[in-house]
Image 1 (tube, rainbow, N blue to C red):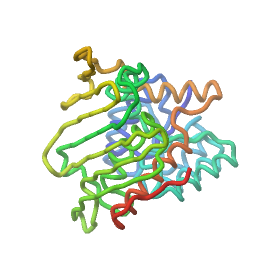
Image 2 (image 1 turned 90 degrees about the vertical axis):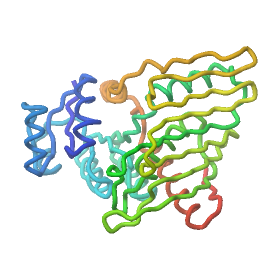
Image 3 (image 1 turned 180 degrees about the horizontal axis):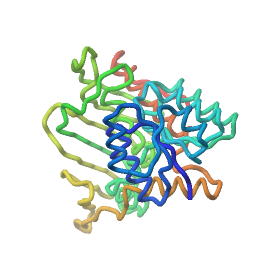
Image 4 (image 1 turned 135 degrees about the vertical axis):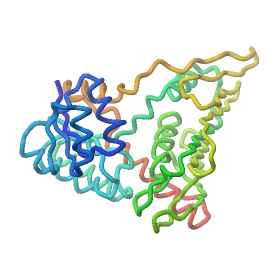
Amino acid sequence: MVKVGLVGYGFGGRVFHAPFIVEAGLQLSGVVARSSAKREQLTTDHPNVPVFDSLTELLAADVADLIVITTPPETHVDLSLEAIAAGTPVIVDKPFAPDAAQAQKVVDAAAAAEVPLGVFHNRRWDPDVRAINAVLDSGELGETWSVHSRFDLDEPDGLEAGPAHGLLRDIGSHLVDQAIFLSGPAISVEASLNEAQKDGFTVDAAFDVTLHHASGVHSHLHSTKLNHLAERSWRVYGAKGAYTQTGTDEFAGGAVHTADGVRPVPGAATNAADYYRLVGQALENGTELPVTGAQGVKVMEVLDAARTSARERRIVALEG
């Protein structure tokens, strides 16, 4: 059984990592948490899991086969490099790093040390994404022209402030990874950002991003947290038809529209722990992690390009 050391026990560590690590059949073998409130919460949630003051302390205890980093994004690089230097495989929460250059630094260090490195782009396994991927693979829409993905949340308090935060790095990390998963590598980016003031920082509170893929597909991505609308929607257009889905439940599924009529499509049968099951299998079998560090860099390159595009009001080309 793969033993997992979790660095950080805030909202993400507690809700999106620890429960799914356990459900996937991995062992939560140690947690780094500093505040008394988080330590008390950990004791309530996982009473037999040891707690540590730092990653250094956790690594010295030799209790983990894998380190999962779910601290604020500005800390990801240093913590990742520390785990890699210790020879321990690493999973880094999104956003992978403050920018693509720093993400690449981590990837290069992992490659030099021959340490597995992955990024927590778990939303590739969302039921709606897997359902759309199956429709695309079936060929019933014909050649894909464009994919429209909108993920609006009524969560004004959930907008995180700081130089490495903002909605583009938050929800945008997921939507960009999903777009690349569905339509392949992006070759250029065009974006606009809506900004707001929070905690003394100017942060992007909504975004519209268009990816031009090498496959010829255009992906149009949108999200907001401040406009009091909670809705997830998809539109996929192809030469022979379209796929649509609108609602608040990503499990609800959608519909394929072709000359033969409308065919309901249920949400794919996925589980929130699927990502960590695949991580465990990869480490036990010595195979590639489900989302690699190199793939995480590609997402960061798009996010960097989106910021440049919004600032300079132009399409930004990406290197192959």
